[in-house]
Image (cartoon, rainbow, N blue to C red; front, top):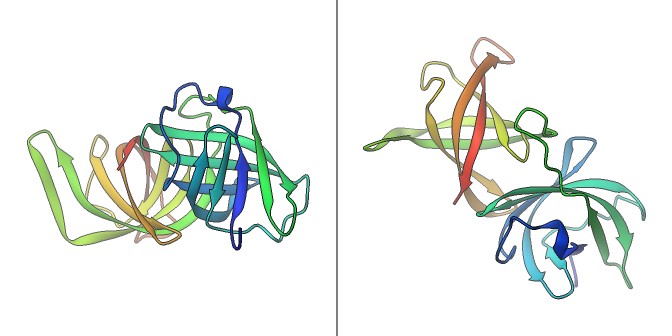
Length: 198
């Protein structure tokens, strides 16, 4: 399999997701800290496995992890246990899809650069030229916290957020639901509810 991992998923853990996970971004976390961002290369629905574009060689057999899959049908999160495969491969057996509400979902520190290309309005879009540079501070199954320069949008704004996971561009649409202090005077934190992934 080369530089990839297998993730085993029980089909009955995914009642709300229909379709294939191939080409979906996935974020793998340890104690709410992102340890790997990857793309799902293959999804074998019969054997309930996915192959991802990253290795996890620093983690031992039996290690507990969280797996956040950004699927266009919805973001799903599982807890999992790392297991060895024959040869140098690994797999993660996934258990317990997490169904917590918006404020109760675990947040995973990401600190990943992103851009906001436009605000989505009822009658179209208001583009940012040039795109507004932001940082995705953390992400959960239901939301994202971004750090942004102040004065560009407010609570209720719908953002078109572009970012890259392991070489693949992804677009998240999210509504700003709260403001919080930033790390310095030049940034503000914006808590956003995820709407969908494109």
